Amino acid sequence: MLDNLWIYASTGIACLYAAGPLAIRSAYRFAARCNPLVIPTTELPEAVAAQIVPRLAEMENLGFALVGCYDCGELAVQTKTFLAYFCNRATNDFANVTAMVSPRGISSYFEFSTYFSNGRAVETNNNRVLPLTPGNPDVRVFRFADIHNANALLQMHRRLLEKYAIGQWPQGEPKGQEIQRWVRTVENYGPRHAKIGYMTATEGGQFYRLTWKGAFLLTWRGLWPASLLRKLYARQSMNVQRHELEHQGIAALQKA
Image (cartoon, rainbow, N blue to C red; front, side):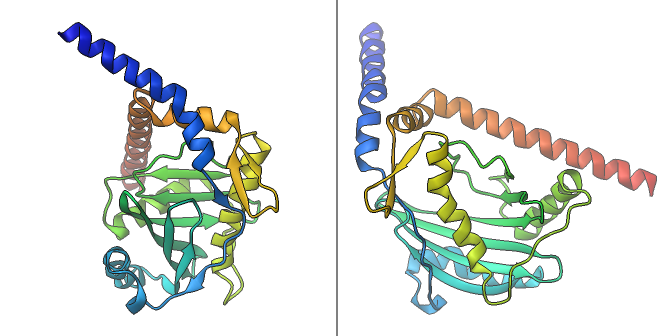
């Protein structure tokens, strides 16, 4: 009986590994352009408002002024993204609260980010969803899914800046154009993955779709056991970062 279950399970997983790339390649599309539309908080969908509105005062108390709430439309197929964007003019740090609606429900996270004059950046968020494609080598991204307090995550972000961005100058954005930083990041997603062979532009250039290379690698990384191993590795990496930052903090106190 158990032998048969193992056979059925193995066969099912093998089918997913074989058929998955075909399904994801035919369905996946990512928008080449992003045109965020300002939306009042009172007009946000109820489930989205529940994720974004409680964070507004929390971010303001941390020194981040609300730039605006935005409806970013359908960036990926069958999704809709909403964003609250914030800026701290004193430090040139930015923050956002992102909520994405899909047929599977709603997922959200918040993030602090600092970009520098040399083109590099540090981002710290509590997004529990790991990307299936390679990250931007110019951007260090740290994910602490268990941190739900904005102040705690901001302190972690500042410690990471002290560790990885010593002597670098935070770069701001012209007043009234702050959202363009986020737009540039989104619109660079397709071209960046096209350069490494994961995506290609569709005719007309409105979307990017997966290449066969991208379809196979995304599928395999998203399926068990690779998905489990990736989560364990990511969690361990963040635990190491947290331990090192805490150790540095104790050492600094001892020297003071």
